[in-house]
Amino acid sequence: MDPNVWIAFAMLTALEIVLGIDNIIFISILVGRLPPELRDKARRLGLGFAMLSRLALLFTLSWIMGLTADLFHLFGMGVSGRDLVLFFGGLFLLYKASHEIFVQVEAREEGGPPQADSATVRSADTRLFWAIIGQIAIVDIVFSLDSVITAVGMVDHLWVMAAAVITSVGVMLIAAKPIGEFVDRHPSVKVLALAFLVMVGMALIAESFDRHLPKGYIYAAMAFSLVVEMLNIRARRKRDAKVSA
Image (cartoon, rainbow, N blue to C red; front, side, top):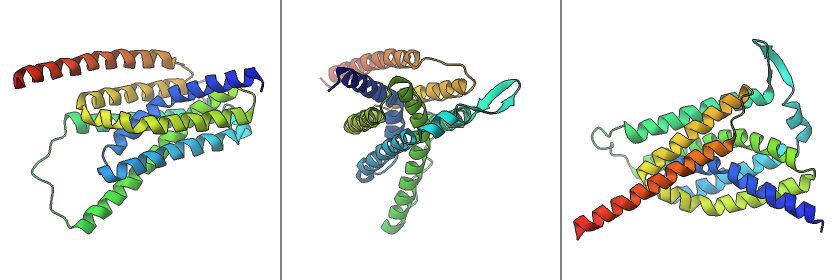
């Protein structure tokens, strides 16, 4: 019943939700490549992995704090386990976001897709499904590491951190579907979200070199770009309404 505990819980939950925005965007973009009937399942599994990875890291706090110790030195700079995770996670995010941007902007269909029987299609969808779940799990670990280290610095009670993680993932689970559907309906927003993930990947790589870029700057830039895009979408709708009238 200590009010300080509830304040810490509310602050940490809000922070976990904010830190999970990039995770939701990444999951929404990857899930959009799946057939509609598999998307909800992939979202649930992806966010389930996010919750499990964060809880697992929370319950291994001594190992987490050990990740901040230097493993070796490179060019006079200490390199820790956390730095390696952030660096390779940032590279993976850069690769995935850049590849998805290429698919959205440059890739073209050459002829129709080859005909295949239903069993072959189902097999291909299953392989794609588990490939996407694997990619989500990899990025979940990177985002979870950053999130858990932040949580450890804010709250002393383990159960408060765990409750905040579970609550934030519940909120993200509710928000993931409408966000994903909105991104799928507007290709320009999808490209904007991918550009946001490129920024996050660069920030992770910079942080691995002890060059901290406050995420507030990234979120502010993304919010401004999104507002501009919303105005463009509204303007296009008005033009289409006038033409149809």
